Amino acid sequence: MSEQTIGIIMNGVSGRMGYRQHLLRSILVIREQGGVLLSDGTRVHVEPILVGRSETKLKELADRHSLEHYTTDLDAALADDRWQIYSDFLVTKARVPALKKAIAAGKAIYTEKPTAESYEEALDLARLAKAAGIKNGVVHDKLYLPGLQKLKRLIDSGFFGQILSVRGEFGYWVFEGDWQDAQRPSWNYRKQDGGGIIVDMFPHWSYVLENLFGRVESVYARAVTHIPQRVDESGATYEATADDAAYAVFEIEGGIIAQLNSSWTVRVNRDELVEFQVDGTHGSAVVGLFGCKIQPRNATPKPVWNPDLADSHDYDADWIEVPTNDVFENGFKTQWEEFIRHVAEDGPNEFDFLAGARGVLLAERGLESSETGTRVDLPIVTVD
Ligand SMILES: NC(=O)c1ccc[n+]([C@@H]2O[C@H](COP(=O)([O-])OP(=O)(O)OC[C@H]3O[C@@H](n4cnc5c(N)ncnc54)[C@H](O)[C@@H]3O)[C@@H](O)[C@H]2O)c1
Image 1 (cartoon, rainbow, N blue to C red):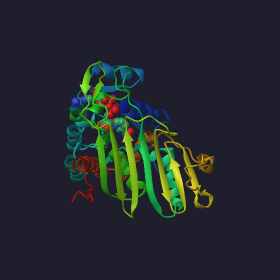
Image 2: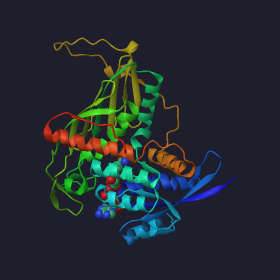
Image 3: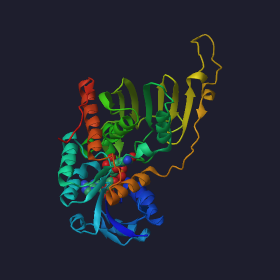
Image 4: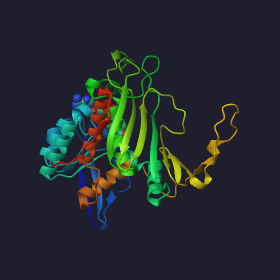
C-alpha cells in the first residue's frame, strides 16, 4: 500500500473554531486514524503546521498535542513546499488578505465561512482562485449534521411530495457578559470587527437551502440589535453595533418559502439549538442537529379550531422518530477528509469559493433588505 503526506497550514488554530473543530475534532482525529484512504488504497497522512500571532499559544498547543511544527511567520510557511494546503480559521475580517496570499503562493485552500466581508471580495477570491488553478473549499458543516443528512434522505426518497415551506429556528441566549461571561467572542457583536448574526448565519443558510431545496431567488430580512451594550472578554463595556437577531424570508426556486429566525437573544424552547420544519404535500418533518421526526399525510390529525375548549390532543405524539441507520461522524472531519481527497486524487468538491461567494451574497443582500425594508432578488453567481 502506498503512502503519502500532505502538509497543512492551519492559520488561526488557537481560535474557537480553529482549535475545537478543525484541529481537535478533525486533523488530530484523522492523524490518529492513520490518515485518509484514497480510492486506489493510498493512505494520505496529514502533517499540520500551527500558525498564529502568539508564539506562546502556538507552542502550548503544539506541546499539548505532540505536534512538531508551529510558526508565527505565515509568509515563510506559504513559501515552503512541504505545506500544500492552506486552511483559514481567522476572524472574518482578517481572512481576505490571508487567502489572497495563499492563492498567490499556489496553495490549495480550505477556509471557514464567510470567505469575505463583501460579495465583491468573495467573488474576487473565486476569480483569483480559478485563474491560479488552485483547489478551494469552504466549510459547509451544517449539511453534515445527522439531522440534516436524515432530511436529505427524506427529500431524496420523495417523502415530502411537493415541498411547500421550511421554517427554521436557530439560536440561544448569548449572555451579555456583565453578570455571566458571554459564551461567544465579543467581535461577533461589533459590526466594525466583522460581527453580526446575518454575516455569521446567512452563509450557512445559503448552502443549507440551496443544497437541500434549491437556488435561493430572493431574501427579505429584518436585522435587529436587541442588546445594545455588552461586556467583553476583559470586562469592558462596549457598544454592540452588529445585529444579534435576524428574521428572514427566503424564496426558493420552485416556489418553496423558507422562513428562518436567527437569534442570539432567544431562550430555547425546542429540542435542539437549530430546528427546521419542512412541510410537503405528502408529509412533514422536523429536524435538528441530530433528531428527525416525520408525520406522513396519512397519519395527519384533523384539528378543529375551538377557542372555547382546551385541546387535549397530544400533537407531539403524532410524530415518528426517523432511525439513524448510519454512522455520522463529526461533519467538520468528514468535510476535511473530502477536501483532502479532492486535493490528493481530484475527488468531488462542490463546496468551493463560488459557493462561499453565494453565502456572502445572501448575507449582503439580507442586510440590504433590512436597511431598505424591501425584498431583494439574488442574481445567479458566476465567475465569468
Ligand atoms: N462553521 C461554523 O459553524 C462557524 C462557527 C463559528 C465561527 N465560524 C467562523 O470561524 C471564524 C473564526 O471564528 P471563532 O469563533 O473561532 O473566532 P475566535 O475569535 O475564537 O478565533 C479567531 C482567530 O483569529 C485570530 N485573529 C484575530 N484577529 C486577527 C487578526 N487581526 N489577524 C490575524 N489573526 C487574527 C485569533 O488569534 C484566533 O486564532 C470566523 O470567520 C467565523 O465566522 C464558523
